[in-house]
Length: 80
Image (cartoon, rainbow, N blue to C red; front, side):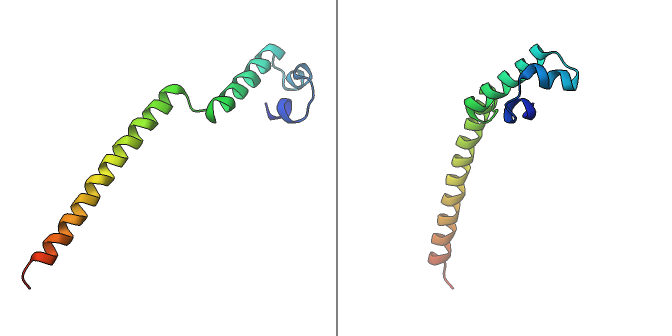
């Protein structure tokens, strides 16, 4: 597929060199270009899952930071 994208040669010529139909290679190239335009090949489902994981990660970080502050306060208040 890179040959069809980078060399500027016709898809039909590149497809014939690899023994695939030009329509098949054309579909692959088109799908690749669509994925690149949509955000580096990440599907909508993957993008939604990534967003969920980022939100969960932020929530866990907030909890961790709260625990850290609590420990610091307890250590400061404890008699030595």
